[in-house]
Structures are given as structure tokens and as C-alpha cells.
Length: 169
Image (tube, rainbow, N blue to C red; front, top):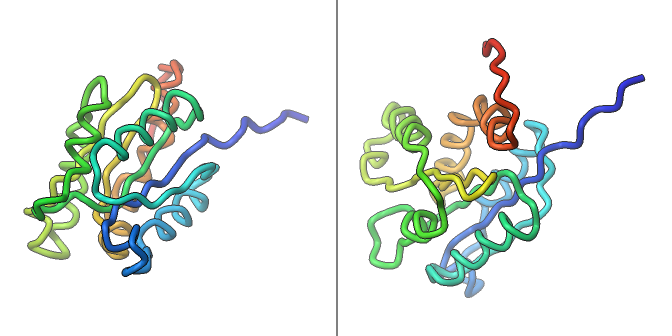
């Protein structure tokens, strides 16, 4: 009997001033958690923070460097509002960006809403951790995560050092 490898360790960070003050119920974070679990990830950590880049950066660093998450998904802070700074905080902690992920999310979202044009969501790599920004709305988080879920297991496998390529459906 062969033992299954452990599920990849993931985390979901919601970024919302209103949510952090208790003025808005976060529905995007729980949707991301459910989708990741359904896709075979172990969601080890979740948090809700205000739109404060230093706090976002510190959390992303801790989850990647100390807590061993191979995938971190953020929700919120990707729009044009003055305090929307999740992409900047993500860029600040990443070694390099993965532009195709943000491009794919925007392209798929454009078939649903023209508002996708003002999304600044990005993805990048810190060490061996993939960080993906999602919108803060429940529907936006669901649609965007569903767009990229098919490649996330392969991405974290590559980051772990396994570079054997298998045919993808």
C-alpha cells in the first residue's frame, strides 16, 4: 500500500479595512478556503488584515518563510482605491512575478465584467511559495481562483523542485 503525499500547505489572507473593523463580513476568504480544500490543498492558516502594506508584507513573509505554506492566496486590496495596496505588498516580498496568472484572471473576468480592466491582481514567488492576489468580492474571488486552480498544483510542485513535466489535460 503506497501512502499519499501530504496535501500542499496553503493559506488565505483577506485584506479589508472594513472587514478588519468588523463593519463588513468577509465572504471572499471563506470561498477561497473552500475552493482550495476542494482542490486538494490543506489550508493551514487564515487571517483578516487592514489595508496596511507593512502588516500584509509581514504576514506573507511569515507564512512563506516560517509556516511553510507553498501557496498563499490573498483576497482584497487589488483595485484602484487609495488604500488598495495588496499588489505592492506582494511585489515587495516576492523574488519574481508570474505575470501569466494575473493576465489569465483578468482575461477570464473580462467575459463576466468590464471591471476586470481595473484589477491590479498579481502573482509572484517568494522562495518556494506562490502568492496569488484575488479580488475582495466573493464572486471575483471565486471566478478568479477557479480560473487558475488547474495550474496551482503543478506550480507548487515545480517550486518544490520537481521539474518533471507531465501532460496536462
